[in-house]
Length: 272
Image (cartoon, rainbow, N blue to C red; front, side, top):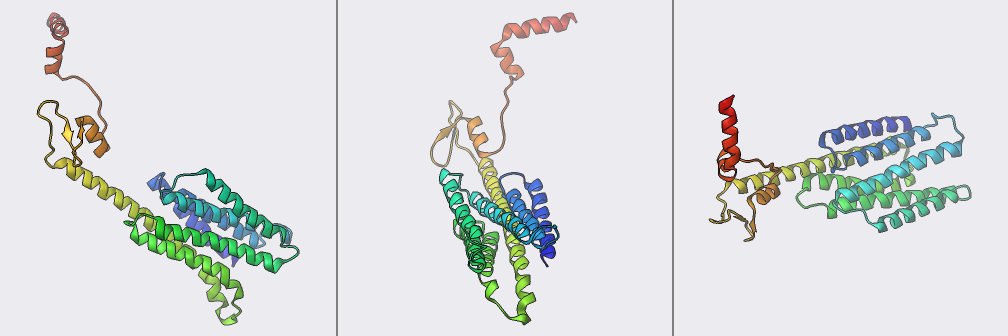
């Protein structure tokens, strides 16, 4: 079962990696891909496929899972538009300290340490879901609801599934884990599409604004925007579109500004 999980998570990670190649930077798919791939490696260790002692493959799997969850939380935080701050390091150190304390106490109290580890994971998932649901731009509705709800359900599931003792539901409960993860991945991808659509709509709005009648000064030819501010033509167009200007000189201006150069050039052309 753990190897099956590893295969599912690896495929999701690879898919997110190719989406990153399509959309480039700024969309979070690279971090999300890394998160799922870390979890996949963790499940490989937990499956016992790697010939290690019990505590060694447990620890290795826990390290990869925890790393993947932290990367997921950080990626959602950055995707929501928040810049990196120094206090982010303090929060990370606090989470790592709690996680290490649970690992250290595992030999003496395995049940308590396991529950504590689940609580830490659940907090990470619920915090990620909260950021998605309430801190993302309101226009990105479709993916935000799916991803945020799935992450919160993932966190709740991670906290309570160990207390379910029904043999009739064991397979169903075990299958909910990849189900929530797949839904979360779909939601993250949908958020990317929402953001792409929002950027396209903004570009269309700017193009539409340029296509309308622009008020210009009769003397200096500067352009007035909707907020009654005046801009040079080049500055205005560069700010409203992705167009960049390069400079040259037309034949009429060349003749007017540099008549001697034009005269010498014509004489040379006539001689040849």
